[in-house]
Length: 425
View 1 (tube, rainbow, N blue to C red):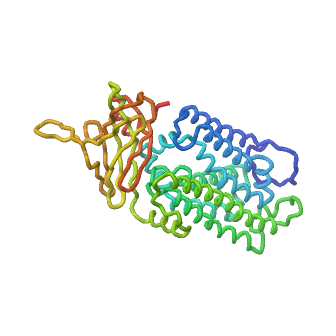
View 2 (view 1 turned 90 degrees about the horizontal axis):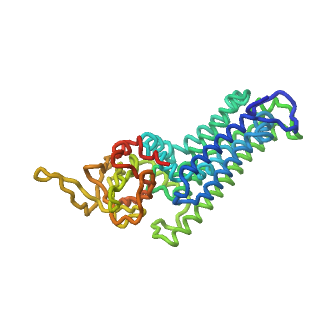
View 3 (view 1 turned 90 degrees about the vertical axis):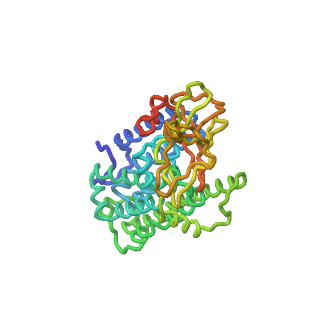
């Protein structure tokens, strides 16, 4: 019995074959999604719980199809064209749905941890994610490496997982966009996806215009149907270009109408008439300078003792040219004001920071217990340890949205260090 689809020396048969390794992998992912949705039920500000579950199911189905019989078996051993369908489904079509299937608070909790936030701040930057995807796509379609990997089950498994990981990374700036980047809104995401339609041109040209079959696995495989190895490879190249374009341009269309619909109801400063070239240039310009203002750690609210007021604590790294925290909005809070704690005549005094908090370029603004903080008053909701509360921080450069964990006062220091901030159910 084979656990994973890999190259074989036998003639193709339409008799069904079981690949239990694929079933275990998909079942494990499904179990993970169930756990996430049970832990973070009904707390999503972007999509409803039903929509998130629908995305997850659709993503798992699109991932299952290319891994299992017959697509997985044909693509791993017999037809380059089906192999390309595998790549499109695993690396391009399934990843955005899988990411959208994760509850937003779960993603916030994941990226709010200090180390994870820093790593994803680098890997999740559009230029890094697209470049990584392009390199992996080129390497995994390099004939010597592709033939070597497809020769065995372990190699085929590695190939499929690398495709999936690169696809998740590629779609991260579009489907997740955490840590928050003030400039990474729909127009820039559209530009990112338009630019992405060009990254597969090299592999497409290599497969389409090569005079001879380049993959020994498919050239020497027992024939399936009437396609020659050369025609099969030509079809593979066309599928890469057209299949990927369908997914990307469909996503561009969805993003455009979301942006347009919101621009009719909000004060959107981005010109509606921006063209694709301008969007791409803006994207590249955003990646060439210093990192933008971003959260450096978790957002934490101390559990109120009396139920009348609470305090919000955070860490923010300043972006290009410095920045200024101008206002704070917290769900369930009528008034959020910024306060400084200063020592005067040997005593600690709290004063209102009317102009907000400034942070220099690359500098760290830390609001901590016993120091500067955001005072939360006129609470219309009951904050209990374990809750997640939506927070919008408005900087001069733009808003940053996040989720704050409510923790007991005794656990504040540990939560702010990232060790306990999101251990709530």
